[in-house]
Length: 211
Length: 211
DNA sequence: TGTACATCAGTGAACGCGCGTTCACTGATGTAC
DNA sequence: TGTACATCAGTGAACGCGCGTTCACTGATGTAC
Image (cartoon, rainbow over all chains, first blue to last red; front, side):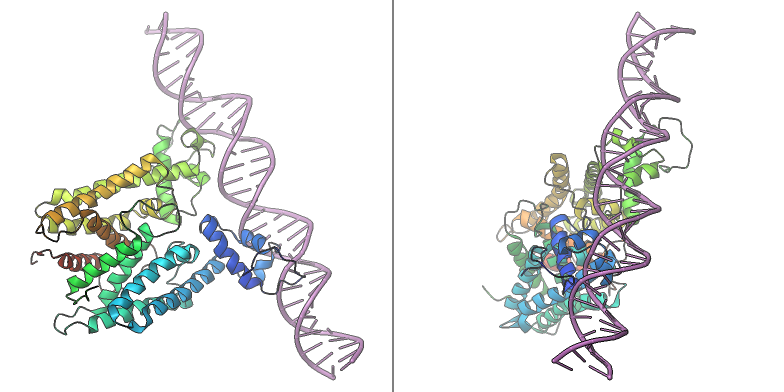
């Protein structure tokens, strides 16, 4: 892909809106969400500092769009990994966890915008529902996990979903980010999360398949 | 306490260094780590914009000090809650989890500086070791938990410590912050974490005390 | 006890800089007839 | 098919602002004798 400023263009950019979103991603990944400015994005896209105002009210709106895109791609990545619980919910859940970590690692800009940059996710309805759709994948997974348990003593699926979310998010935030805050670990984040989820499932009384 | 700019003072401030740290905490809590500036801190402490340079090289150094203080207080809070595993490791672990959440809730400025503001914790040795001392409390708890298990099939204590950390951190980050990113939940963050840890411990094969 | 002096902490004025934002403008594109 | 016109997207110059930072300075504090 080429969203950079290198190739020549006429007076009209053609797709400045998309280019600005990609500039934001690039700059946030490079310098963090805090150090990214509206003027920066314009410069990166190779347009004048006034041009972005044709597409976004201000920097916050651009950040919100980035977070929105992030949730959409996050949802897609999680759904792809989960694949409706095939071939069995436990193998699929393992993929789901790995996809969560992989997204945090490979898409630090999206991840910051979604969870760290202070974008008010609750306020904007579109953003809120995108976040909920992403969570719905975890919720669906929890449903199938719970359905695989004997009816007596089945835990609430919503709680299980929130627990899985917390484990994945905690592992990703503490150990799985691309940036320098990484700590030395005796095992990879993916192994750490996998072991954690296995212990948790055993604690739920699930008959974990021997693998 | 009174670290504000209200009361009169002479030419010398008396304890500007501490006042600036408190100003940083106050301003980060109000406007987020991103929106806090060196000049802001000076203004809040009631001194000229040049005064902070007598005490800190730049904004980053001040942020690093805030993170350092944060880790120290975090360690103290966790150690107090853990209380060497009294009266039994499981009751103490429950308190530990609650203390983790409470710190994140009540000290958002410290928490951001420590985990979110991009302070390079790995680089500064003092900061790194303060972080490790805080983690050591979790590590010690995991040791006692593991020691309470039958020797056969005992999990590595380090892994257990990392899992507990991830659960607490994930729960705090997603559901337990003071800011507006909170989501509607069927139960409190503390209850959510408690249930999660109980399931996890059961999965480890621990005989959870009936409570 | 008093005086001279060194040290220190904070002043205030100044600077360059980049950001956010507005504005009248202009080049390009599309559409009506 | 061509021409006139409306619409749109990006320009570039300008502005005020607050930040970071430096500097010679000055008021306060402590110490030597």
